[in-house]
Length: 298
Image (cartoon, rainbow, N blue to C red):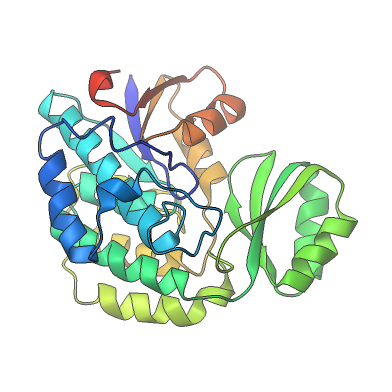
């Protein structure tokens, strides 16, 4: 059986998610170290969500969400490894791609923490455009309208029936009035992530990545911007550089996984977002979730 480990990104966070893993090896030390780096108590932040998502200590604030998710996912994946589990290949959704690179040994824990601090800061300060989730639509109609409407792209191509769009407020309002779909939901985010609106922060992020060593991966990694298996550290760095301005091609990632007739997808993180997408998109696939200390197996 081919085993794929997958790591979710923003949107999968849950109140209390740190409580479920804090007694695993190295969890307390990692939260303490990273809290000092970020200058805030990240364990306590995992307990907090306010109506005002711009608050300094809100779990849904991009500056907090990304690092808290990485901490939870990294502790879980390392515990799986310590118990003798390992994947054939790995992939992560948006932020989860950094967790995947850590899992593969491409990035160290410290480099991952510092990289996420820089990435989340740049993304939170982008403040241009917005995003919207689209569910139940005709793919041809969607592609036609995205091509026709200026300042609009598919940011997350999650499955045949679910995408997230990025663009200007005007463009999002335009397509919401023209497309036939089951649901169109504006997202409460600080910018149009995974789109050309992120060009300036993407340039800064690329320069930051130039100073980080990418090592040869222990497992092949599927990147968001180019969904194919890669073992080349230079290629993986270039793909991560391209991620911020380009869409998350998760539908194609799942199609690539589906080429294995005997596939087991293991989602490592606090929720079953990616597992749910897999169940709806793929046929005859085994899906498991690892999200807590009492679940270090599959």
